Length: 246
Image (cartoon, rainbow, N blue to C red):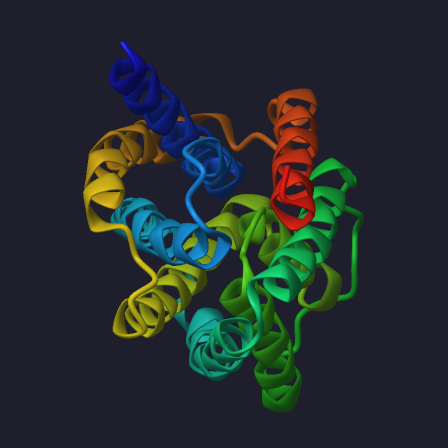
């Protein structure tokens, strides 16, 4: 019964994450419930989210809503940031890692509940801005990446005024490559729980496919904010318990 509930939760997380954001939060919450050490939970999360976003961005690409001209410079510079963020988290003690994860979790939650605002027009010739924004995105994703879709969307709309559905598609491409590189980094250091990751990744991918299909029809802005916030608070409590050894 427990395994069935985990699979169902993973599928729902994949759906929510592909639709907009929240899949990483749901998956990370599941991993913390299983009392997996924080670094291993993050590494396993990277594996699962790479699968989720691969399905998502391919779905958006086939639908013709993914702007590769805007996305590619962001992807390339974000990979550097992702490596830096992952290497940093792996180099610090577990309690310090927990604290950093909590901070970034709070940042991700803020972007989730915050309303997007209209912003300046994108300028394609500003390559330096694209590279700097991509670097910042990569560092955030490398350390944790909770609510990374909404963080990336917020950055894209803040600096480039990208339409919401197009920003969602670009975000999924950036997040896929960053999570895949981060997953390799964690795996090389032995911080991936493959049995749990494989158990979760298939329902996440199925949910992700349905979520992307639904997003293409709805083009919705924010879904299930209250649920997301509740999961965020519960995850923070679990991390705090780990730090305090309760």
